[in-house]
Image (cartoon, rainbow, N blue to C red; front, top):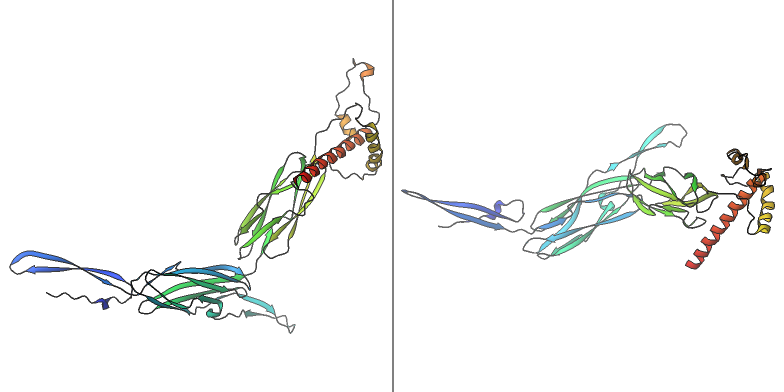
Length: 369
């Protein structure tokens, strides 16, 4: 008995194992013999990973590279060659005003290029031995606001053709900030307060951002939850800003938000550092220095030249004092004839505190270097 196997029935040129059964019936006997049949058809075949190339949306007039891996999964050498199948691009339409001042608008289609001028493949052809792999480079040359969809075909000599969908789009980077300033109000000078703002990508092209704190007058006054990051298309990225006054004073700082290739955006931080204070009738450690400072600050307070937003006001403080008990000995009573002197003393103390804190900060910064 002769059994023949015809591999020509396998029209798709994909290697496969074909199984069947041979049933032998005996004349005059009910018994049947079954013989398993198996035949292997081998063609030059490739494995392609990933099966498609998507460049996403990139910046106009730039380029991007992606890679796939070809693997010879057959038992023979594979000779291959790449080519393109043209497909209709997705073309956005733009309106422009006619130059003849007629006021009529006309639609102008953006010019699109042949797909083989938009995408490039390297190497275009080659030979792979059994089990051998090769990296294939795909390059997308972005146009001006156009989306391209096409098909790259790798033809195998003696084997099948493999279709690899390719797509890419280009556009401008577009973003906005939820705010260009944050006002933290009054914050204890030795505490911190967080507020948030958002970087929003309103375009199709992902972009990277960077927070630049080099413009701050001193380190530590501002901390950001993310100094760098990437904002995907149509997404928002939250930045938490932590404000640490450090001194009891009006504070206004500016840092920079750098997005993509655009000029940096200025971001303003405002806040008022406040502190708990107590005025005592005891003599000062350095009465001469205290008196000199009072003489300098008094005319500034009278003219409203002190800009601190949380100034002490003696009149208001005096109204909040508890009444003096009548049994208190007269010599133990302290009478404030001019509440304005309290304003002067409180402002002197605040400025001295600011100076001492800044001196400590500068000394520690100097030691750190």
